[in-house]
Image (cartoon, rainbow, N blue to C red; front, side, top):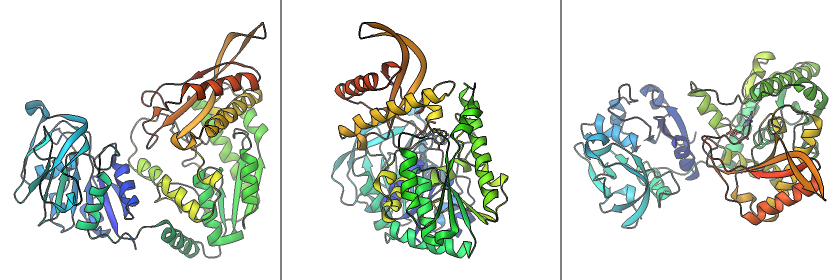
Length: 512
Ligand code: XMP
């Protein structure tokens, strides 16, 4: 078993990021809701606990809290932002409410490290940190001393070395905090006694063993989308069970240019039973006349389940269904209850429809960047491992309104040109997702002295840490000009190209 650190999530936007940074430091980490009973936490035998930030004030009615016994488990605790305020309040210190005392800080803040603490080991005397708080810690509980201050925050970093309890008002997990990763490493290695035993090679070995143990000589079925997650899951599973794995790839006709060919070529070469189902006409027919985005998603999701179930039934007795679920899906579904903005069709649905003995989710504890690292470890080609995220409903939600074969062809070609241009300028690694969408707008243009009345392509490119929030990529004008010029010239039926300059929120990454 790997050494484990637990992040208790108080609803902060960076909770998953904390866990990712801890894993980057080679220590396994799990995110649990703040309500998790103390016994459950204890059973996991964590070497450390991190209390995340959160949007509440400790003084708000019904504010999330923790069992004070958490601080007596003799396990090191690091409270971040709200987490540190909660710790102080529960241990008898004083948190000053923002309304009465000012002291709010947002964004980059100069922080002075002027006290002794293992948490601040190897840090310079001054560095920038990232703050985002209203309330702040004014009086520390007994046993604590300060080692970091800012202009408005008399206790930006503090700790009780005896009890190994530490607090930071700023966010070490955010890249804008200089030496943030060093601070987290100090917590893990200097305070929690981490050994650094989390690696993708170790994970792969153990996952293969676990799958073999669970599956025995049973057969496994996997719906392969060609995306990073299901691709890596299938390679891992094929390592474990070889030809007892069947991968079904449903070509719904909404894939990007050449994608189905790439997927088919690679997976046919592996030691597994790979099947590609051509369902293109079927999906188009199901979508005929439908323009509303959620209706489109539901139809695609339902049709996918129909096609896949038929395949499963035709294959005969298969005991296990494998899915490429990853950790953010697990965390987010565990804490559901928010508004449904877009229904992501690849989560759920399948298992209920087909009677399987069990579900295999070999990647369910991994973050996306770990899935890519695992893929590389397993020798999955770079063109699949570094593939940008692509929605399950594919190009169908990048054609605004009703989907037709002709519109799909237009968006597919425009998208291919845009991707080529981005790659040729070496920008692919700097943008997290970029694509073309076909708007439902026609406008007037002039081409070769003649009037045109054609379609408008929208280009979208975003930079994001987690896809929950995103900003549009600042692509150089000349790159946009080249993409626009080439799309209008090379893709028939398009006379105008626009660039989407909205951030998420309030917009979303996809246009539908
Ligand atoms: P939005 O548009 O919700 O997208 O801001 C955030 C990320 O999710 C992807 N996305 C999907 N992925 N099935 C998926 O597997 C879906 O139905 C779906 N819809 C959006 C989107 O491409 C972006 O990366």
